[in-house]
Length: 316
Length: 288
Image (cartoon, rainbow over all chains, first blue to last red; front, side, top):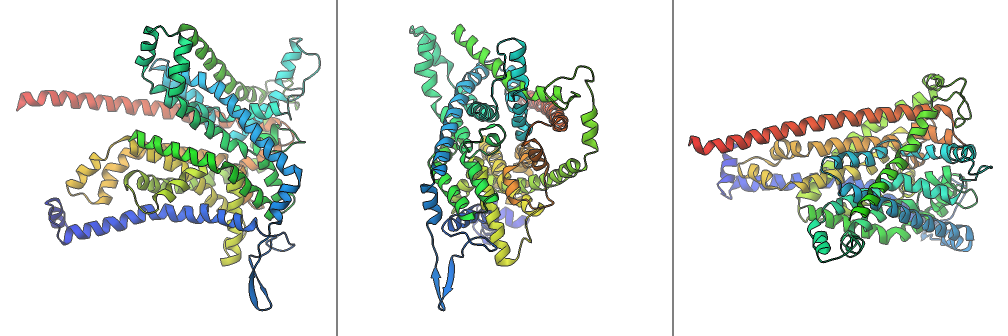
């Protein structure tokens, strides 16, 4: 073996070199092949199954949907139904849930950006010693349970909760204000839970900015606000986009936050999917809802992947 | 310049208050005697009675134990698969299936959880029909689902760590005749070990915390801790969940504190090594 290695490092393309390259190629195929296979089986194929079930009809059986191929008069026939989709487009409940989810996700993303940008900016411009501490303070809540952090807001927002009690004590209000089960509560919940996802990409971007540009602008007489709008803001566009996508995409399908904090008369689409599946046991409609969420999100998801790739290549 | 710096700093302070007040409020009210939770019972508080109630609650303890076991296995599986995927993406250049792998590891991170959960359950139902496995859903299917979505995060962490240092060290080892496996074990693995460690912790936390995907692929008798908590808090605040949350926050805080101190120590040691190496380099030309 040592001889083969010696041959190899001499650059002799003998048996050893070929053997080594052969084992290396097999090794590489194994290293890449195992995760590819896993994800094909447990990520891609499941989506194909969802797609296929969205074109079947409910029936009282196990599993509760019609098979793809049925035997009629001794011949196989393909059974595809569009009834799940036509149902989605005729019942206004689904359309309004979609639009409502998009609205909630958009408003929350905007709020996240307005709160997260100054925070990321302040961290990026603070001293080198305090930066890791501040970053850790931002990320720390992320390590504690998502569910419990959302739950904490019930105690703050409910009618005899902390906020109402404090406002009544101060005499600002005399009757409790309904805060829980409102749009406002959902916005707060999403902003609170996803804020680190907005701050981190923004910080990574803002930290790399060349301060000399701002100094040059100041030397040339630009006021701070103008320098910010013309130099810092355009340069941080990639960070804004990455942070916004990281908040917007999961927020559209959010389930826990609207269920615990949100309205009961207007559901978000993630809850509708779950209810169709668990309460109504209508697998085809639940699958069709999933496919339509994906269609809505396919553009933002691909945009996010392109950003991610470019960022990784930039690190290189 | 000054005024804007002030505005951003004020926003940072307020933002941090916003992030921590809800957690602190849970912790404070976990010592409240009143069942009303947010109405402070001055006469009988603080009390530890909700902590005592928690310790005798078999349902919560059992669910916590199940969650820990699932998270341990899921995190370990996710680390193996995620490291392989991260290696392939960062080091193999353009290979067949690279785009597929890149897409499939990035997508679960942003995919709404209801969709991932639904699709995994439908997969398990379909395979049970086709090959008779798995026999119903439960801890096994939960673990498989958790490995799948956790490995995406590990991949990102490992891949960006690998992208952060160049290949010259690995190439040097190759040139010196090391086999690929040797290069991986002696050069690459030690370099990416911190990333693997934080990837494991991240995967453990995500698995421990997941509710939505788990709800789809869990069966009767396999309720994880988040599922038990969710069914309790769905209709309002309950005092023993406050106590549970306090314990969990304290565990995480202690863990993070230990990790920070350890990393500081490692970094200081590395800096000292570098200084020693630099000093040795300086003295070398004098000797020769």
